[in-house]
Length: 147
View (tube, helix red, strand yellow):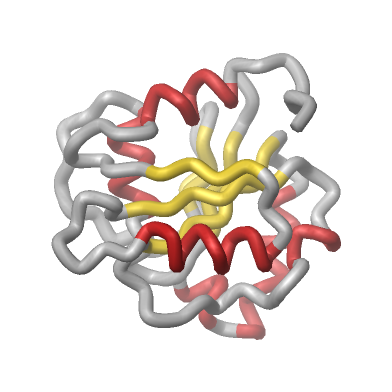
């Protein structure tokens, strides 16, 4: 399985998504540091929110095979600049989280991820297990699929 690093702002659903991908019981967990495990690297939201910490994400992205940019379907804005994936040396996927939320607007989050340059976008609900298997199937591929 390819190693995934997840990047997104605080409360975008990174840790909850990881619990769903690992088939663990979901509970609130605030990531305080870069959590480097066997198959997934979890990053604190503050690293994407603070310009001074962005370099750490660049360094850790070299440890991954795939970069996952997360945007919650409840977000009123996007922190990622347009075409940001152009600077990445790994495949980048977009992940829309919290698609089950009553105030979710998944298409808006997808639009932002497409502006970032993500060609592949997954729609997820960690609580309803939506999109989880699709991400696991993608990560189990030996190489990047042709679009």
